[in-house]
Image 1 (cartoon, rainbow, N blue to C red):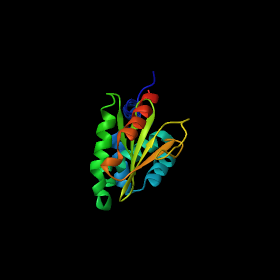
Image 2: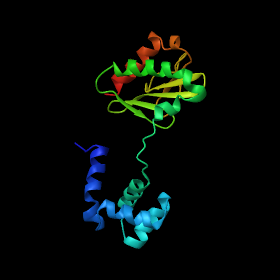
Image 3: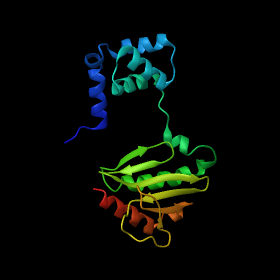
Image 4: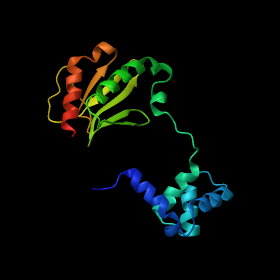
Length: 181
């Protein structure tokens, strides 16, 4: 069984001293002294001046630019004009999480992916008045409210109010969940 991305990151971080000749703190000090503040420029410095391989240069540059502040991606999605959609998002999320303990919630910049072994749904605040709920029901014909969508989620349902998230939509989400395990 393969290791998780988090395990791989921890392994790379642990290997920095051996693979690059210096611990991460030394690299961060070098970068700080350089005055560089762009990812690409830091990578170029590490690779050309110090012979650091691409993967480790990328990791070190990323660490050097971390602010220590994590952005709340969901809060950002449902701010401003889209704030009234947050209760509908929370209703969809609660339903999906009740489908099983293996539901993984993965916020992105513009959407929230729901996964098991693979993605089964995607919640996107598409406009200030509508959430697009993508579901992975590959092979099912689009019909009525169940529209063709994209490669990751074959179908979409447009939701504007809580009443739109009805038994029919919940059945589609449940089916997509069952197919993703």
